[in-house]
Amino acid sequence: MAMSYTMEYKGFKAQIMEANRLEGDYVHGLPPGDPLPVYQSEAFKKYPDNWMKGPGVFIVPVRPNKGLWFDWRGNLSNNTAILPTIKGCNPITGIQTSGFHLERYEEKCPKHGVAFEGDRYCPKCEYKWPPQNYVCRDPMWWDGWFNAKDGTVRQFFFTEEEMRDIASKLIGKENTVPAFGFAFYRPKEMRSAPRMRYKTYSPYDDSEYLDGTGSYVNSKEMYVTYSNSSSTSGLLMASDSCSSFSDVEIRPDSVSCQIGGILRSKESRDLTISKKAVKEVSVGAGAKIDQNLDPDPYDLDSWKDTPDASMTIYFVFQEKLEELKAGGMKSLEGKEEGMLEGLPVG
Image (cartoon, rainbow, N blue to C red; front, side):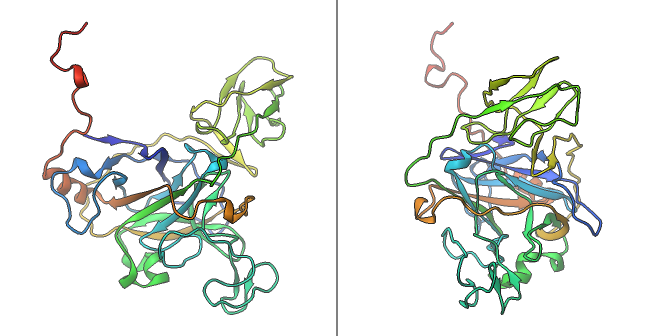
């Protein structure tokens, strides 16, 4: 049925992670999440005329009143920059997406063109701007609408209430589009990933951490977080005693990881989607999450001027997904034996 949990296109990967919607007037840690199913657009025989279709275009069913975050950890963190857009609006800057351009904000406000005061403070906007309009390096994920005052984000959450749709408020309903997207950039010259060595301590003392990584150690399991690799997020090790320096191989295993003192762990939940009738998917701004956007350590000119790949995503509620499925679906896997199908094998 051409369904998976990871979007892949031209060597880049992304997952849409569903999380519980956070509540409370305080700053939350990073919520855990589960990957949502994704469908390739070409698997649907009947398809909306005004939607894009083809390689790199995906359909993702979602549930209202659920949080979400974007997970790009399957990419080379030191060789990947991601420019996100939500319904035509950049969630980091709040500016309407106009072409795909990586931007830095160092001297002037991109909205008013006036010189910044202090550390990227615009006197006309009356808030501090983020350092750039894209995500790169660790951590390779993004959870919400950027909150300029304290550098936190307001959690993304799906809603049926159009009045809660942040993109419509920021750029105008008439300027929004039904699609979401990620533009992926490579550097002009690929960077090599440094080989890392980690000092590990006894896993019996769960107050200890892996030296230099900020990764959590407990219950005889040491979680190593390092994304400067062609794989995702780390290697899960288990040992009764461990107290020496050792080389750490990075494997694409799912692990808990901690960035800046905040634990993001796996959590299993029921992903059953109700069949409640809904219309358009809106994305609101919920509770605060402790997530800062670190400045890109590389020169802006070191990145390519145009993206190497872009993914287009259509979020739909269950009613719309069932409507699309009712029109028929086709397998994109092909024959099991490929060119050997029907030939004497075995």
